[in-house]
Image (cartoon, rainbow, N blue to C red):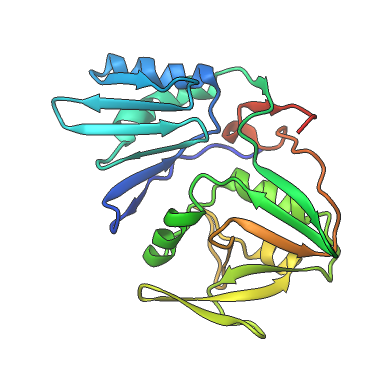
Length: 239
Protein backbone atom coordinates (compact mmCIF):
# COMPACT_ATOMS: atom_id res chain seq x y z
CA UNK A 1 0.00 0.00 0.00
CA UNK A 2 1.24 3.49 -0.85
CA UNK A 3 1.17 5.70 2.21
CA UNK A 4 0.24 9.34 1.82
CA UNK A 5 2.89 12.02 2.38
CA UNK A 6 2.55 15.79 2.20
CA UNK A 7 5.01 17.33 -0.23
CA UNK A 8 4.49 21.00 -1.10
CA UNK A 9 6.12 22.46 -4.23
CA UNK A 10 6.80 26.11 -5.01
CA UNK A 11 7.05 27.25 -8.63
CA UNK A 12 8.81 30.61 -8.59
CA UNK A 13 7.82 31.63 -12.12
CA UNK A 14 4.14 31.30 -11.20
CA UNK A 15 4.66 32.61 -7.66
CA UNK A 16 2.47 29.81 -6.44
CA UNK A 17 2.61 26.87 -4.02
CA UNK A 18 1.16 23.48 -4.99
CA UNK A 19 0.20 20.65 -2.67
CA UNK A 20 -0.76 17.22 -4.05
CA UNK A 21 -3.61 15.66 -2.07
CA UNK A 22 -5.45 12.33 -2.30
CA UNK A 23 -7.97 11.99 -5.10
CA UNK A 24 -10.87 13.53 -3.20
CA UNK A 25 -14.42 12.37 -2.69
CA UNK A 26 -17.29 14.81 -2.18
CA UNK A 27 -17.21 13.97 1.51
CA UNK A 28 -13.53 14.84 1.76
CA UNK A 29 -14.10 18.17 0.01
CA UNK A 30 -16.65 18.95 2.72
CA UNK A 31 -14.17 17.88 5.43
CA UNK A 32 -11.67 20.41 4.07
CA UNK A 33 -14.35 23.11 3.83
CA UNK A 34 -15.39 22.57 7.45
CA UNK A 35 -11.79 22.63 8.71
CA UNK A 36 -10.95 25.83 6.82
CA UNK A 37 -14.16 27.50 8.01
CA UNK A 38 -13.28 26.70 11.64
CA UNK A 39 -9.90 28.34 11.03
CA UNK A 40 -11.51 31.58 9.87
CA UNK A 41 -11.62 31.09 6.10
CA UNK A 42 -14.54 32.11 3.97
CA UNK A 43 -15.27 28.95 1.96
CA UNK A 44 -17.20 28.27 -1.22
CA UNK A 45 -17.64 25.04 -3.20
CA UNK A 46 -18.32 25.14 -6.94
CA UNK A 47 -21.52 23.52 -8.26
CA UNK A 48 -20.80 19.82 -8.61
CA UNK A 49 -18.24 19.99 -5.81
CA UNK A 50 -15.22 19.82 -8.11
CA UNK A 51 -13.43 22.83 -6.59
CA UNK A 52 -13.25 24.48 -3.22
CA UNK A 53 -12.11 28.07 -2.81
CA UNK A 54 -11.18 29.51 0.58
CA UNK A 55 -10.09 33.02 1.49
CA UNK A 56 -8.71 34.37 4.75
CA UNK A 57 -9.43 38.09 4.89
CA UNK A 58 -7.01 38.70 7.75
CA UNK A 59 -3.95 37.31 5.96
CA UNK A 60 -5.00 37.66 2.29
CA UNK A 61 -4.41 33.91 1.82
CA UNK A 62 -6.54 32.30 -0.89
CA UNK A 63 -6.52 28.52 -1.36
CA UNK A 64 -8.07 26.53 -4.20
CA UNK A 65 -8.53 22.76 -3.90
CA UNK A 66 -9.51 20.60 -6.88
CA UNK A 67 -11.33 17.30 -6.39
CA UNK A 68 -8.72 15.73 -8.68
CA UNK A 69 -6.28 16.02 -5.77
CA UNK A 70 -4.37 19.30 -5.93
CA UNK A 71 -4.36 22.48 -3.85
CA UNK A 72 -2.68 25.74 -4.85
CA UNK A 73 -2.17 29.18 -3.39
CA UNK A 74 0.07 32.23 -3.56
CA UNK A 75 0.98 31.55 0.06
CA UNK A 76 2.26 28.52 1.98
CA UNK A 77 -0.65 26.13 2.72
CA UNK A 78 0.65 23.52 5.15
CA UNK A 79 -0.54 25.32 8.28
CA UNK A 80 -4.04 25.57 6.86
CA UNK A 81 -4.42 22.11 5.26
CA UNK A 82 -2.13 19.73 7.15
CA UNK A 83 -4.42 19.50 10.24
CA UNK A 84 -7.24 18.23 7.99
CA UNK A 85 -5.24 15.31 6.56
CA UNK A 86 -6.01 12.78 9.36
CA UNK A 87 -9.75 13.37 8.88
CA UNK A 88 -9.38 12.99 5.11
CA UNK A 89 -7.61 9.67 5.54
CA UNK A 90 -10.35 8.36 7.83
CA UNK A 91 -12.96 8.97 5.13
CA UNK A 92 -14.71 5.93 3.62
CA UNK A 93 -14.15 4.90 0.02
CA UNK A 94 -16.79 5.98 -2.49
CA UNK A 95 -17.91 3.99 -5.52
CA UNK A 96 -17.56 6.28 -8.53
CA UNK A 97 -16.63 6.30 -12.20
CA UNK A 98 -15.37 9.89 -12.10
CA UNK A 99 -11.87 11.29 -11.63
CA UNK A 100 -10.05 8.52 -13.56
CA UNK A 101 -6.30 8.05 -13.74
CA UNK A 102 -6.15 7.41 -17.49
CA UNK A 103 -7.97 6.67 -20.74
CA UNK A 104 -6.63 4.53 -23.58
CA UNK A 105 -7.38 3.96 -27.25
CA UNK A 106 -5.99 1.68 -29.93
CA UNK A 107 -3.64 2.92 -32.63
CA UNK A 108 -2.29 1.05 -35.65
CA UNK A 109 0.42 -1.13 -34.12
CA UNK A 110 -0.09 -0.01 -30.52
CA UNK A 111 -1.85 2.24 -28.02
CA UNK A 112 -2.25 5.85 -27.00
CA UNK A 113 -2.77 6.39 -23.27
CA UNK A 114 -3.77 9.74 -21.77
CA UNK A 115 -2.88 10.07 -18.08
CA UNK A 116 -4.85 12.53 -15.97
CA UNK A 117 -2.18 13.76 -13.57
CA UNK A 118 -2.42 16.37 -10.86
CA UNK A 119 0.56 18.43 -12.04
CA UNK A 120 2.58 16.72 -14.77
CA UNK A 121 0.84 18.23 -17.79
CA UNK A 122 0.49 21.36 -19.94
CA UNK A 123 1.54 24.67 -18.34
CA UNK A 124 2.62 23.20 -15.02
CA UNK A 125 4.77 20.63 -16.82
CA UNK A 126 6.94 23.38 -18.31
CA UNK A 127 7.34 25.16 -14.99
CA UNK A 128 8.22 21.92 -13.21
CA UNK A 129 10.95 21.21 -15.78
CA UNK A 130 12.17 24.80 -15.53
CA UNK A 131 12.46 24.44 -11.75
CA UNK A 132 14.09 21.00 -12.00
CA UNK A 133 11.44 19.33 -9.82
CA UNK A 134 8.73 16.73 -10.42
CA UNK A 135 5.02 16.75 -9.61
CA UNK A 136 4.16 13.11 -10.36
CA UNK A 137 2.70 11.51 -7.23
CA UNK A 138 3.46 7.93 -6.11
CA UNK A 139 -0.04 6.67 -6.93
CA UNK A 140 0.22 8.14 -10.43
CA UNK A 141 3.52 6.33 -10.98
CA UNK A 142 1.92 3.12 -9.73
CA UNK A 143 -0.84 3.47 -12.34
CA UNK A 144 1.64 4.29 -15.13
CA UNK A 145 3.69 1.22 -14.14
CA UNK A 146 0.58 -0.97 -14.17
CA UNK A 147 -0.47 0.27 -17.61
CA UNK A 148 2.99 -0.36 -19.04
CA UNK A 149 3.19 -3.78 -17.39
CA UNK A 150 1.00 -5.11 -20.22
CA UNK A 151 3.72 -4.10 -22.71
CA UNK A 152 6.31 -6.53 -23.94
CA UNK A 153 9.96 -5.98 -23.02
CA UNK A 154 10.78 -4.82 -26.56
CA UNK A 155 8.03 -2.16 -26.66
CA UNK A 156 9.19 1.45 -26.81
CA UNK A 157 7.50 4.70 -25.84
CA UNK A 158 7.96 8.41 -26.49
CA UNK A 159 8.80 10.34 -23.34
CA UNK A 160 11.13 13.02 -21.95
CA UNK A 161 14.45 12.22 -20.28
CA UNK A 162 17.11 14.32 -18.55
CA UNK A 163 19.82 12.25 -20.27
CA UNK A 164 20.55 11.81 -23.99
CA UNK A 165 19.43 8.63 -25.76
CA UNK A 166 19.92 7.25 -29.27
CA UNK A 167 18.04 9.40 -31.78
CA UNK A 168 16.83 11.90 -29.17
CA UNK A 169 16.27 15.62 -29.74
CA UNK A 170 17.21 18.39 -27.32
CA UNK A 171 14.51 20.13 -25.29
CA UNK A 172 15.71 23.28 -23.53
CA UNK A 173 13.49 24.49 -20.66
CA UNK A 174 14.94 27.55 -18.97
CA UNK A 175 18.48 26.65 -17.96
CA UNK A 176 17.76 22.92 -17.91
CA UNK A 177 18.31 20.47 -20.74
CA UNK A 178 15.94 17.57 -21.43
CA UNK A 179 15.53 15.24 -24.39
CA UNK A 180 12.61 13.93 -26.41
CA UNK A 181 13.41 10.23 -26.37
CA UNK A 182 12.12 6.86 -27.48
CA UNK A 183 13.12 4.23 -24.93
CA UNK A 184 12.02 0.76 -23.77
CA UNK A 185 8.93 0.79 -21.55
CA UNK A 186 10.82 -0.99 -18.78
CA UNK A 187 13.56 1.67 -18.73
CA UNK A 188 10.89 4.39 -18.56
CA UNK A 189 9.17 2.81 -15.55
CA UNK A 190 12.44 2.12 -13.72
CA UNK A 191 13.56 5.76 -14.06
CA UNK A 192 10.20 7.56 -13.78
CA UNK A 193 10.69 10.36 -11.26
CA UNK A 194 8.08 11.35 -8.65
CA UNK A 195 7.66 14.00 -5.97
CA UNK A 196 9.41 11.68 -3.52
CA UNK A 197 11.95 9.78 -5.64
CA UNK A 198 14.62 10.71 -8.18
CA UNK A 199 17.43 8.85 -9.92
CA UNK A 200 20.82 9.70 -11.47
CA UNK A 201 18.95 9.47 -14.81
CA UNK A 202 15.26 10.43 -14.79
CA UNK A 203 12.28 10.00 -17.09
CA UNK A 204 9.16 12.13 -17.29
CA UNK A 205 5.78 11.93 -18.95
CA UNK A 206 5.64 14.19 -22.03
CA UNK A 207 3.98 17.59 -21.68
CA UNK A 208 0.66 16.23 -22.99
CA UNK A 209 0.75 13.36 -20.46
CA UNK A 210 0.07 11.10 -23.45
CA UNK A 211 2.17 7.98 -24.05
CA UNK A 212 2.28 6.27 -27.41
CA UNK A 213 3.12 2.62 -26.92
CA UNK A 214 4.21 0.45 -29.83
CA UNK A 215 3.02 -3.08 -29.20
CA UNK A 216 1.20 -4.02 -26.00
CA UNK A 217 -2.55 -4.30 -25.48
CA UNK A 218 -5.30 -2.24 -23.92
CA UNK A 219 -4.73 -2.05 -20.15
CA UNK A 220 -7.37 -3.39 -17.75
CA UNK A 221 -9.64 -1.04 -15.79
CA UNK A 222 -7.80 0.65 -12.89
CA UNK A 223 -7.90 -1.04 -9.52
CA UNK A 224 -7.42 1.24 -6.54
CA UNK A 225 -6.72 -1.38 -3.87
CA UNK A 226 -2.94 -0.91 -3.96
CA UNK A 227 -3.04 2.91 -4.06
CA UNK A 228 -3.58 3.18 -0.32
CA UNK A 229 -4.18 6.56 1.23
CA UNK A 230 -3.60 8.43 -2.04
CA UNK A 231 -6.89 7.24 -3.52
CA UNK A 232 -10.25 7.21 -1.74
CA UNK A 233 -12.32 6.62 -4.88
CA UNK A 234 -13.22 3.01 -5.58
CA UNK A 235 -13.47 2.93 -9.35
CA UNK A 236 -16.35 1.32 -11.15
CA UNK A 237 -15.36 -1.59 -13.37
CA UNK A 238 -17.30 0.10 -16.19
CA UNK A 239 -14.49 2.60 -16.85
